[in-house]
Length: 156
Image: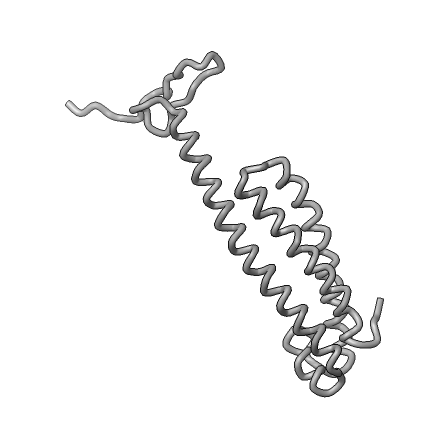
């Protein structure tokens, strides 16, 4: 599917990135409250929107290339200077703002994921029998199971 102008997808791209931002804000709340079920509902929606946004971006890049500009994000400014108008420039700037917001939310959410993983690892470590190192685990009856054969050697 070809588009006539690099600016033709900007509104749709804004809507998609705006929807991704909203999902990422929800994701952040689920991460803060450690709601795994809520997180599971977000991921497929976010992926679907990201794929649609990537397709629109590819269409815009092809239109830029067809118009004789760099077929990438950095081709938009030169195209806007020649073939754009105030409305398209406003749409482009809004898309850039939304993209920056999504990037920052992604950074924060990544930190929250790491924090949750560290907390979970700490909880798992607390369940291991004291003094047995990382190999100790509890069996199905709740009793400590031996760590298995030792790899220590006796010298003497």
